[in-house]
Amino acid sequence: MADEAEDLINELLTGVVEDLDVPPALEATIQGLYDDVGRWMGDALDEGEWSIHPQGSGRLGTMVRRHDAEDYDLDSVVVRDVPKECVTQKDLKLTVGEALGDYVKARASTTGLRFTSVSEDRRCFTLHSEDPIHMDVLPAVPDGGSSPTALWIPDRDLRLWQPSDPVGFGNWFFGQMAVQMIEAKESFAKRAQVDVEDVPNWQIRTVLQRAVQVLKAHRNCYFSAGDPNHASSIVITATAAQAYHGETSLFEAVMNATALMPGFIGKDGANHVVLNPAHPDENFADLWSAARAARFFEWIDDLQRTLAEAVNVRSGLHSAAETLGSRFGIGPVTKAVERLGIGRTTARTEGGLAVASSGVLGTAGIAVKRHTFYGA
Image (cartoon, rainbow, N blue to C red; front, side):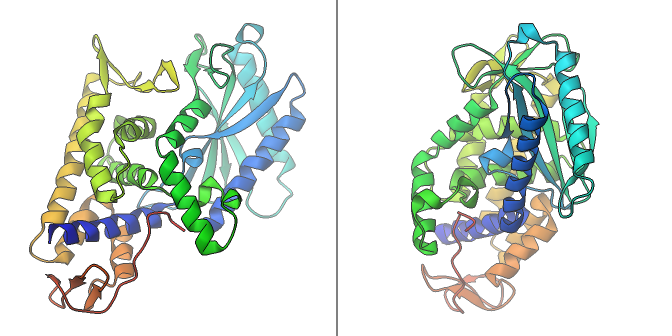
């Protein structure tokens, strides 16, 4: 019975993050936006060689929108191939900002999804659109050190260059699930009757990617009235990926992650440390205070209790859905429930799981479609 309950929670969690994930049709549009901005930056900036790369959740396949908004955040880094000694942080930002402003003006007369304005932050720029998509653009220069992907990025006061390596981190993250990614691509290629080499990463979701999405979806609700940076996406992703040991059950992967993630948060005196595995000089928790760290651990505990309560519920499956809805958003959980057919007399004959008309686990009913974790 415990296995059957966990299987159902697996399905509900998968349905929740599938609803919060980027729709497949929008994924193609996003890739086109990355390419369009990249081509423009390459053509417009002729002082040395420039390149632009996706980073963050868009590159990693872990993006989720908020449960109460249709909004997708893209992240990118634009690199000027010059030593940091040859350019100031202020001048680097000025050049990138002017190019992005020109880009917005040039695209003003085009049709379809486009960025319509640009704003400046202390460290990066943000391209805004009339659609629920915006892109952060972070200027950078190469580190020139041991890693070919390491970068220097501006600090918030434009004084001291800060170490970073988003591309290296992305490569490390995909390495944490390399076997699962290959298996997922082979399965997708077989169903779609295409070659494995023709399956892009963005069409695949592994259990690790789904687990990170579950963590972020719960974070978005938990901190909805406060500061979500108490549990920043990069800290969640780095610690969850280190905690991942090839679990094939989403429920198990998330529960194991919440148990192990705190162990990957170190201390250096009074400072908390979450190092970039691809760049040991980059601390993802550099802005943490003692209060922020405490809130992170409280959030982890809340997620553990929520999932434990949902899987151990005895009063009916609707109660399990209500438990998840209180922490992941009623809308996404309701959609997941509807997809599973809960609320009617339903069952999955494969494996013997069923939901009786009373809403209590039983053994009879109508077969329910089995979903995958890969978002195909």
